[in-house]
Length: 256
Image (cartoon, rainbow, N blue to C red; front, side):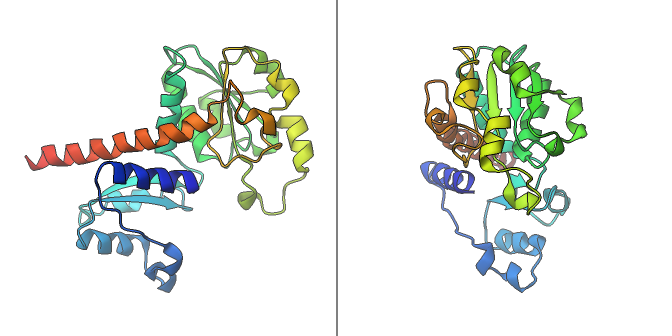
């Protein structure tokens, strides 16, 4: 991920941390080394924090249960599971506009079932008292989300929304199963110029990126007045700095 990887690296450098580059494609994992053994190696070399993105949902469960690992692990995204730092920066972005999450009407629209962003945000927004709607192709909706909100056609709810959170179509998870063109998706499920006109003037538009212009959102709307997509990326650096600082401060407190 360009955004997650780069913003964590910039956050680390702003905090004066030393960054150790790691390329899985050129690592011992290509020779059969397990993720645990890779982490064990970095731990032995004196690394304090590992930021890990994995295609395996819940990969961290095995790592945190190993008492021999002393380094801290930050989940940079796991499969279709969770994306904690993206969730926190999204909350930060919403909080910059609205005084409270309680009662906010938030639609998460797009590839729900395959989205770790959708899962993390739905859980936390629901816990904070927001009213969460899920929109998009019914085939890409997972009933496990019903504990956090309700499924609707975007056109049914768009006029009442405070936040419209769009999601990228994850082609890499669908293979060749996508049954409609980019144009069809945009017309049926995306934020078109026509749908944009139905938003209230106080509503904000969000997207974790990368953005497929003229698919999830019309090209002209990516940097529109109501869009917060660029602010989300900017807030990602600050939130990840906060995460890193909190971990290191907690570690120092434990040492003292």
